[in-house]
Length: 347
Image (cartoon, rainbow, N blue to C red; front, side):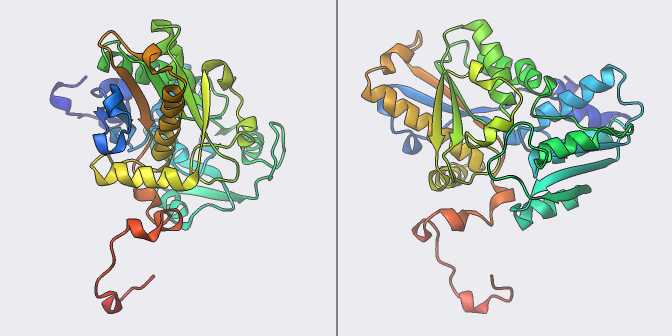
């Protein structure tokens, strides 16, 4: 780690983006007002991945997938990256790739992508390729963006990192996320929870944590059917993921759109800036804890201090999704705009 966290020289930005050269990402306990189990000795911490250099969780696998391929000498003929992603993954890949000499990045994005996220890709110099995703996809569906990206990568100068089946994705979390959480909880972790998207986070983190304590409960949270939350997937969409993620998960919860957005907003209003997928993770964790309490299982989760120490992942911040909150959170949760008639640019 550089002295005083200062990065300089010709590889300053590359070093700054290297998670191995950064301090531990903060682990922050949520306030009592958001923890209905506080009186039961349950402590809930958010792993604030929004404080990574690129502002989101995907910075870890993006760096690891590119750095490991570079270390193997496999980037010398690559001029373009192609991925299936509408947000954090491809943005992180593009920014890291430029530090390794790859200037051009394209990405398949679903036709329902928000205009705000499309603008983000354009801002970072990424070419979006809009794709009509199949409604009931299978792993080998030729119309899925995942498989279209794989076909495009058959060109000699193009590489598809393949976040859905590239082992360097979960390896990033086994290398950094798991060890940090274990250190930060002094090995007294009772339960780990993460949303299920590419599933790299839960596989890699679980792999490390289970190496320290084989019976540590791992909770995966997916989107409930027909519920929208950017990043995490429904059970159907998880069919497109190439990893055997179920082997790394002990319990599965399903979370809904409205509660995910509400909890994201409540966390953010209290100073823990967290996006909708973070709210989804917390929603699933609270559901799991309620079931454990109802079934008399909370005591089995207590650590040597007599507490239940839970960690969930806050994947990114709320700013990329600000235009979505009013769609899913009731109006009563927002202040009124006074003198609205004076606005020059009205929605």
